Image 1 (cartoon, rainbow, N blue to C red):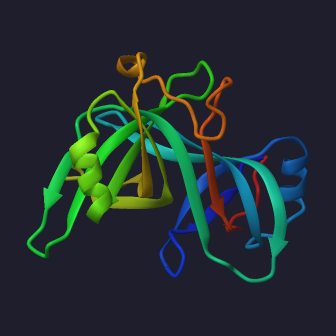
Image 2 (image 1 turned 180 degrees about the horizontal axis):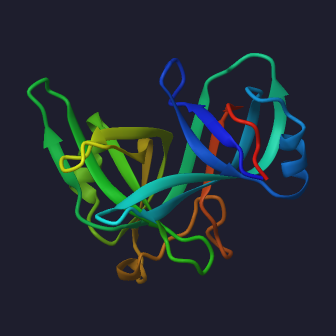
Length: 212
């Protein structure tokens, strides 16, 4: 079953965006019995898929729903992700006239033996300074934060393009990994086994009828 999920960007925010979901087995049955627009607290895996659009490849977020903990009558904003992997390139740091600063890099996170998902990471303030000083290509780091969706107009076509971005509220430094050049990384949820990306984005409002 493939429902559409609407997520609030972060606590206290009215900004929301939609992502595609997928569920199997009993979880799919639960969703199928929910009405359009229902609100639920869900946990699962956030995957970044590359879709070929001809002139460019677009990053699409897909959320694998593993568990519906409970349905809710009111919307309580909650959007949390935790991942661990290897940094794909040196950190891009910017300082603004306002005095703010930010740092950006991509993080490769493997799902079992599949090719890694590449997560764009964004940090601000003191956390950005930590990344600027200590993080480089090949570094192994873990981040916790929330997911937002960036959008912009394509310069050539004028079409609106989007991509998911992880805004990190915490960053942990884990040194370097020998597999860093190949994008080897595991999730924070289970580094000792055949790991998967772990992310939690809750609650999710089902805005369209689940499609089989």
